[in-house]
Length: 161
Image (cartoon, rainbow, N blue to C red; front, side, top):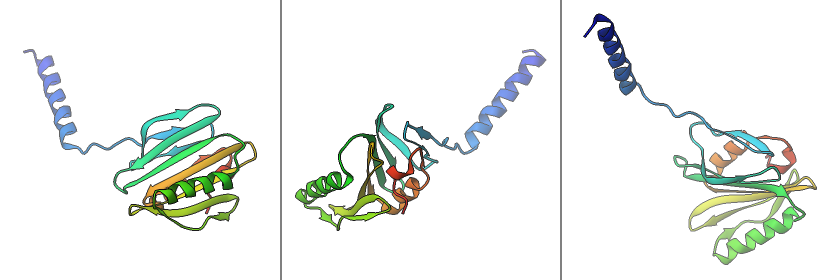
């Protein structure tokens, strides 16, 4: 081997060795839709294939460490949030969930529930043109922390409490 190739060989070996010894860090993912953008950090990730179109989005985020998931659906629609939430509460009750009272705060209709020992909450809001439906399962606090970091194009569609 020539002197030049030995130099490259040792340099390449040192780089490989350094990569093996250094901890690998996951790159944070940013999810962007027509309605909102959210930096998922290193804890959250998109689960499955999101439906992400100009007039609707349906995406699920999961955080395995917090044992939590969030499903966000936003789109054009005329259904009232109270009707949507009442239907969801009825469905959960039919599955023997413990469903808390339906409440309203800052234009958002919501309730908390527990299904088979898994806690969660659901909420819905409208801006008169679009409707949102958000359900958090597992760790409601972890879910709320992520929801508070959402950069929404219209904040009336997302909880702010």
